[in-house]
Amino acid sequence: MTSISNALFWISNGLLVPVVVLLLFFFLRAVLMIGGFFGEFWQKAKLQQQMNDILEKLTPENTEEFYKQLPADKNIPILHCLHKLYDHRENDAYCERLLANYEVDAEKDLGRSRSFVKLGPMLGLMGTLIPMGPALVGLSTGDIASMAYNMQVAFATTVVGMVIAAIGVITLQVKQRWYARDMNDLEYIYKNLRHEKE
Image 1 (cartoon, one colour):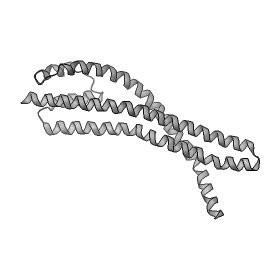
Image 2 (cartoon, one colour):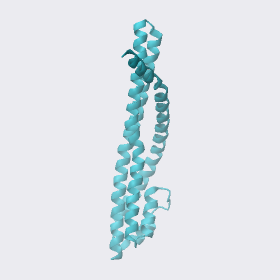
Image 3 (cartoon, one colour):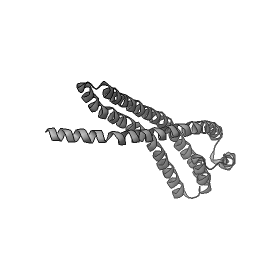
Image 4 (spheres, helix red, strand yellow):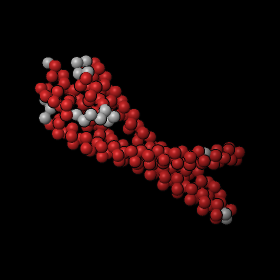
């Protein structure tokens, strides 16, 4: 039994470095994501105001006028989708596929935030529990310096893991609302384009 316990102890200790490296990697990715998120937030707020003004007046009869009022920047996913939707409005199958693909791309983008929500606390907890073993050993042998160092690592990994999760939660909640509104707007526009043909 002692040999099994020792094997588990060494495996656990061996995982500390990969866990810390992964935490640092995810923390850097989370910081980069939150930076891009704020830029996207301002861009989205401005675009949504323009879209709301246009959509309030949209009817099947004035879709041509609506298309001319769209911003020309096709690098924004919803605008790119809208331009393709209008260009292929005669092809129902293509338009439905386009909307389905937009939803798939939205889920892919949301998946990044979901991974931070799940992996942040998981890695943080692992980074907390792994150093606790050596810390308790240090306490039992009177090595206070070793115990303090291990406790410091344990608390630091917990904090970093929770920061990663917090960034994931914030971006996930906001982006879910964005994509829900985008899908609603795209389906509304598509229905108007279909009625235009009839």
